[in-house]
Image (cartoon, rainbow, N blue to C red):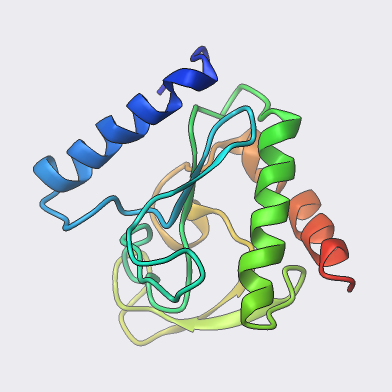
Length: 160
């Protein structure tokens, strides 16, 4: 995926992801609960209500009691925009706040299989990267390096 897109093209990119997830992967919907573009716009991904505990299909083995957020672009070598990082922080503060979860905390999740043996309990940050639970480089080294900032900002936005 490219980082050289205009933000008005983001909806078309999301529709393409939807087609891939539904037609190619045979999922019922897009895998991610939310998507964020480089301008900081947050989009609903998987249908069912953004304030509800809709199970995504984002991290095989750890979809239960989690939410998935895709940031449009590639962030292995490119730095994520400040707008995207701010949007991620605000989204984490709000969505985790619905359940009273501290974005700067850690939690235990039971693996449903995949990277970790089914049934194994794994400790995660409540705001983690895709690669923490799945065999991937996602979200890319440069965005992964911003997760600490996202956690602390989200916690501050919750008043913690």
